[in-house]
Length: 189
Image 1 (cartoon, rainbow, N blue to C red):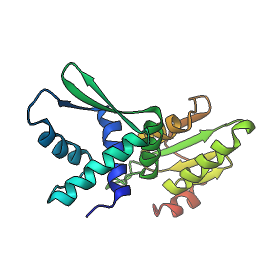
Image 2 (image 1 turned 90 degrees about the vertical axis):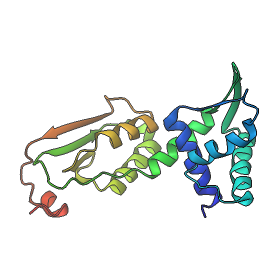
Image 3 (image 1 turned 60 degrees about the vertical axis):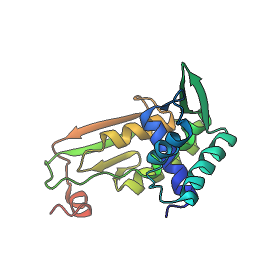
């Protein structure tokens, strides 16, 4: 059985990805239809009344915490994230990031460079920590390398940290001079 935090995380990221949930509110069986739809966004199977209550309570608490909002639009209930809910859902997405390893390396290096001004030091350090967590190799102070595509992951990081393309750039290169340590780090020898 999923715990409350996991259900909350799944609901918020599900709504973030979907852009919202619309449920026909004019249906007389509206109450019976809403919980299974909400449970689907929580990646949760409803087995009994206790499960239904857990989902209902989670949505109620998300509304109370001002993370989601309900709106009636032309006979449909529309559930969406508030700005605070988007921030929290974005954090969940960042926490789950990982670079996928394909079966074969294409021989290209993905290089990430960033130049973030000193007044954004907290962002820079948080970004550096996440880059390390993703497994990139630090080639120089603000130059990081990985053999596998990380475009989507880095784009999400850029968006989450509110950085511009001038502050953070991605490069694809066919070779790196003296790349022995980098290949060793990624077990590519």
